[in-house]
Length: 237
Image (cartoon, rainbow, N blue to C red; front, top):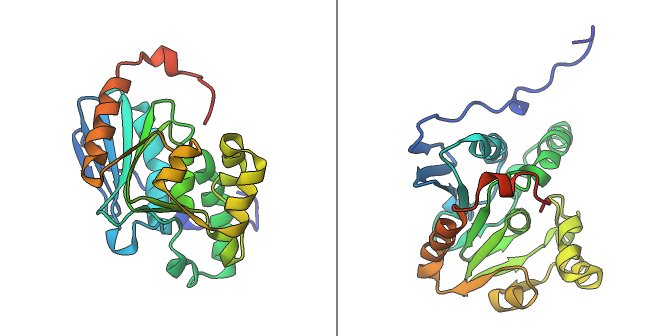
């Protein structure tokens, strides 16, 4: 470190995750690995599975770890409970943070989150129920396949809060729906349902809420047969 340089804050260095190959439980996410399928559950149901700083750190450490594990062939990402997949950043926590902390988060956490999941070489399947908004939807845009419940609601409401989406939607959404419609969805912050999401090509299938996980797991079992050599260095999401 340079003389007089300020040390980086401790929160920039995620702690190692539990190494039990079959079951690992962190405070804010759940992980199970069975038959080559890693099931990751965002575990903040009382906060609609919104992403606070601690959960973001956990996920930043988790994705490369799962990508390197030989016993993991496919990843299924979902949210705890039936109300929400994920509603993006925890705005209540954000309102309590200082400007300096927000700047550090923007440079060292949010920017890394933009491509963290997309950088995983293995298939990633989103199992969506309820609200899927802001950074939650931006995670879905990083997934390969998305299964949504018929009660799913999508939105990118950041502009209505005074800032642009920072998790990759501005780059990925136009590639899927075109620039004109992407601008509409981002600028207005309006909500759209599962049927519209399917029509726009943003999700793969719509099923009843109680069928989301079975459908996602069935898709995962099919996807785990793909040889790693086929997936390696495939085009990014």
